[in-house]
Image 1: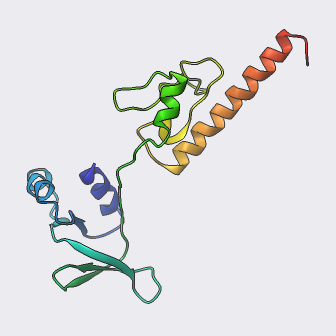
Image 2 (image 1 turned 135 degrees about the vertical axis):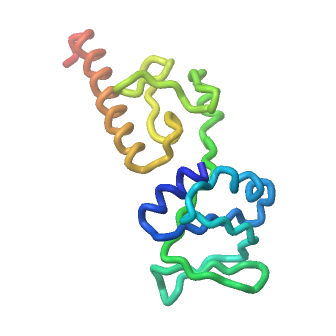
Image 3 (image 1 turned 180 degrees about the vertical axis):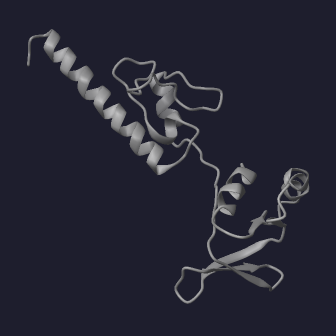
Length: 155
């Protein structure tokens, strides 16, 4: 994932500094996969980040006392499902990665009447993706409720 994000960032900058924040195992594994001279690996341990004059530039402060100013920072943190217990309580089918399995396009789960969207139902953790999925889940929910009311002649 590091290199995927680095390639995306490279489209916005002449050079991408890939900070591994002291992770020696990660730093040792990446050089074999970096083909671009515009992606530079920096394994130093980061002490802090701070805005330069209120931004938008960011100063990366290292534990060795040095620092580097960057035009922008791209981060891809590990995403963890905080609703895992809810998923288990509801008995929802999940993928091997732990995401809830949904039917397309309306995002209904393996439990009738239960819909899932966003990070819970996709490995793509992005706001626009979550918004898109949420829209379809809302349409599915309303359609299902209307169908149930129509079946009871309650509309």
